[in-house]
Image (cartoon, rainbow, N blue to C red; front, top):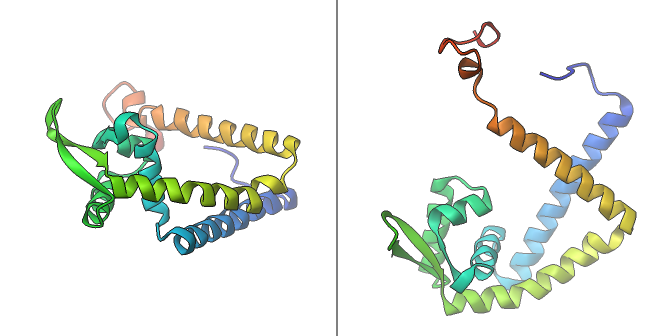
Length: 172
């Protein structure tokens, strides 16, 4: 575990600013996306992933992994979007226990209409406000944190790491 001492003013300002900016930007982009296109953020993410896949189709597991979602979240979202005619589920010919999620014409039209508006808003309200050096710094920061989190997620549980099959002293 890392250092648990209270945050220094510089650290607190950085963390608080990041949290506030992230939450405000996310809320703003969601609201404008819905207002401008009628799509929710979740709708957009699913449609974008399908639209960028070969033939507009992805096995449900691949879609879930691409989005980083839980199985139940994807299942509910796909059901709601299928009810609106944006996509459909088909049996997976490679694995009868799973499904393939397919983009329908209405979904393709929706994502093709929404993307230019969304990208324009993203540029206006975020990307164009930053200098090239700030964009590079943001990319480096994001990639550093993501790489750390991926490594942590791949560490074996402490019980397994102890090699005894018993919980380690640290986890008791």
